[in-house]
Image (cartoon, rainbow, N blue to C red):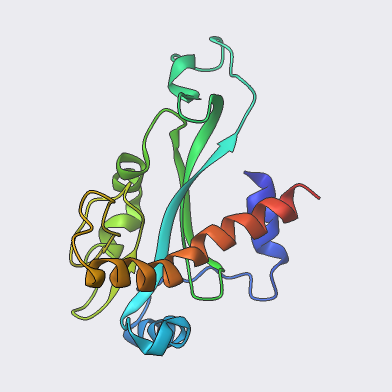
Length: 180
């Protein structure tokens, strides 16, 4: 966790700004995302959200009451579920690490204080996430393979992935900085 904080501090613009800080900031952020969307197809996006498992050493029963809560069966390691949101330039604009590795992204997101603010943006704005998150007007997610019924669905997934990749890039950049 210290590596994540230190990486953000080392950034030329170290102040993390909530994507919903002000209407002006939201419009600027949405314009940035529109510029990376093919033909400006998706407008109004103010952030990409995802979870990342931050690996930790296995805690002892002297340190925590439930050691198993920190174990992620999916990744087969101990960790903390870090929820983060980024802008179109893959800069983190918010993060939270108050969930154990056993907790899925959807629940970890709901536990994040900023999630309530993110989920109620002004009309016309939204954040994007992957299928780990519940679909809503303020949080569009891709169609699953079973839901793909038309070329329009595939196109939607393509355009959404152009935006959503930014959070994957942010975690990738962070991981490469913190491991060096």
